[in-house]
Length: 277
Image 1 (cartoon, rainbow, N blue to C red):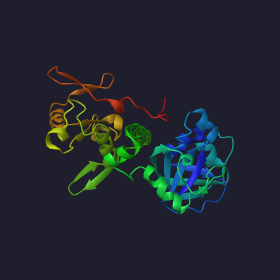
Image 2: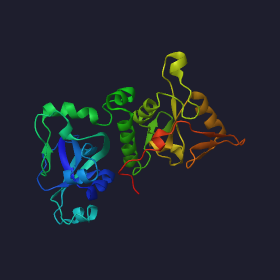
Image 3: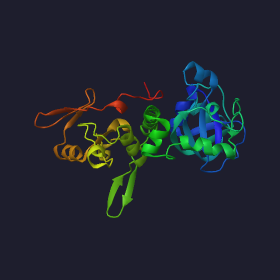
Image 4: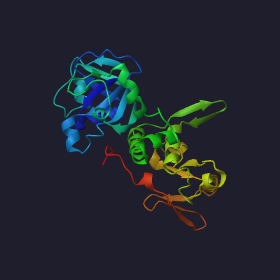
């Protein structure tokens, strides 16, 4: 695991292209986690001193930028070039945090890149990474507000990608991230966003489903803003009647004229700081 300082003007390209650049030769291994840490002066200005890390890269390989062409192509506003370009397999969100707020063995401050994270500190950082916790464990550990911010950052990443197809025997499906679904359900305590139905109260068992507003098969994205948490009844009737979803009013308009407004809307009202304006 490595810490990489990044500036606000450079981080979007890092997030969208899963790339980074350094001057010192990085002795990384494929699959290593690279934490993108916003430089401190900019974090202070943006009110993010306690959320300097919101994304991480999963390292794959590097290329030497002999002429500076790659650096200038991807970071034209940086005013410099780097020797080594890091290509990563993917970008993941983290629960927003700062290394300074954790009880770590050393201080990871400084501007040098990269800076390795000690083995004994990695176990304290890993829970903040997307995929390490699920559903209620994630919500109960970090709280619904931080989970909403994490999901919003997940959306920023996925909006830049094409839907992933997966092949299973005899037919093709689109990939759905189960952690995103479980995280959304946990925010609403498995209540239906349309009617508020809560199976926990009657059956002592949390149960809900998730519905993609724009189907993945129609180029819809597997992001929170395209997902509604529903009870089984509403999930089935939405598929059967195919109502139109009004994004501005957050309501379904059914063919028979009925309109149903979402009564639980928290995740639709929360956007990532890094969302494109």
